[in-house]
Image 1 (cartoon, rainbow, N blue to C red):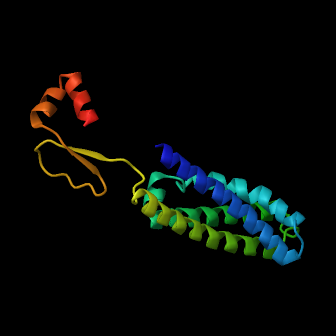
Image 2 (image 1 turned 135 degrees about the vertical axis):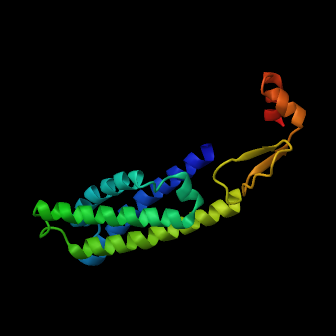
Image 3 (image 1 turned 180 degrees about the horizontal axis):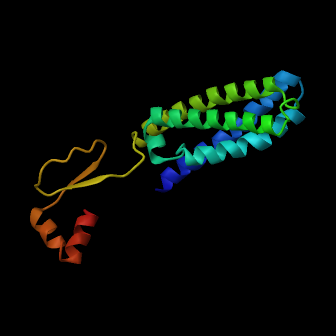
Length: 178
């Protein structure tokens, strides 16, 4: 669990840094100055919107860590929804004339490419460093039918010990320590 929380935190912080960096880069490319006041204004709105939508969209979930396609899809949808929501907000507040569409467009495209690259790299690190496993699954085999769980740890237990573990806490503890 500790490792998984660390991976969530790394992805979360990296997404925030990527959004801030891509919006700053968009401001630099569109306006030619760094830091751009317009880019900072966009940052203050887009990043919190993305964080909320990403959290509700399960961008930082076990399945997103375990399945690259799912994680990419969730991140892309969260970025798309947050950018559309930002555009709707600026339209209704009538500030759409004030912010640079080029800054925003460049920033979202750069953020999209960087988030895809981040998730691909995270998947490669998880595969290489942790054997592609983000959850611990233990199958205790006691002579019953075979249960097929890929990437699961397996322990073969004595059937008599498993039977007695239902009523004897010491026997259950012995299975847990095996």
